[in-house]
Image (cartoon, rainbow, N blue to C red; front, side, top):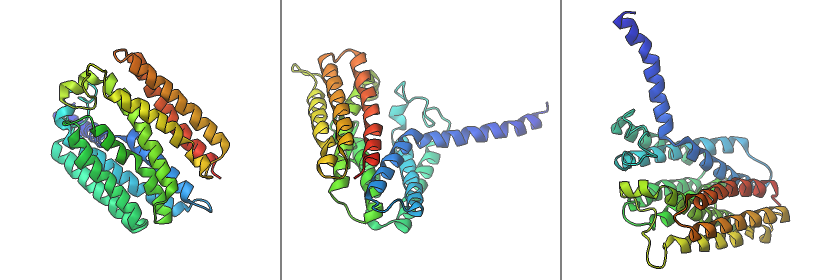
Length: 300
């Protein structure tokens, strides 16, 4: 094979690798969760069935904004990502993309997503989505190097997608989406601290303060995990008490919430053991999709 032929044959592989790197830059699994929770809020706000055109426009705009925001987050954290075993093979620390490429891609995708939502939905939906971007990038991301309270701040943008979905239909914010916000906000705290315990050495190496240091009375995050888990049980059954979901939903939400509380207590009692943290993480990953599905299926 000649040098010219080899160069030509290598182009598709290189192009494919770059496309894969850009796709990875968007954290597709996180984007998928954002879309699911946004669509749940949209469906619950729709009294007479889904408006398919609005739903598609909502998902396209949200996907672009979320993908761009997450790409910008990786741009901002490229140095710390290079220090951690779990993130060192992301596109930027792995040198598959240049920082300027990630910055341009993230900025264009975010702007395009917000513009799409502004044209296809309404100001409230667009404003909530813009707030997600601002809080995530300008509050949560820099606070990760300063204080473990970043976990609480970071739970705010993570809980806003169903509010945006609701607003896309109604153009306002009501009690129902605020309950969904509260469920997702409280759910994230045990989930995040379970992740922080599992990767505490990695985070410490990079100077990221997702987990506070232990004190003579234990770890301060223990109180947050237990209180948030108890509150999640109470808030999780609120849709039934408000008349927007049925008794089957309430039973499932309460049972799954009690499971998260039990695993949270186990993690607090054995803070140095990875197994309780893994179990709490698994329980949290089970909780959210099932509760959202039951809320949609059992909609009153």
